[in-house]
Length: 94
Image (cartoon, rainbow, N blue to C red; front, side, top):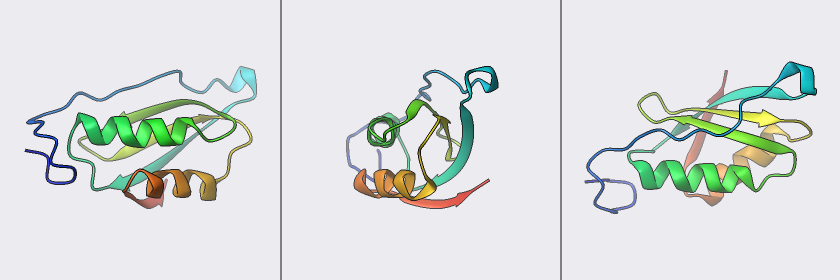
């Protein structure tokens, strides 16, 4: 069972949307998010980050906690605030 949100999910798949393309002037930044344990967690984090202006894609690797954010014009602080709004902690950016 998910210990972070008690949703009852036993396991989860990762989710992904569009990845960054240098040709489009977009960047891809990888962040480490702690506390995600299931698909509901992934959905919450992806949804909040996806609301940040300039973000065009979010890809989450649940087993490692790596979150790749693509787009242009967004800041690390905006991503941090979105992750915290979802109830998780941004551990670091690689």
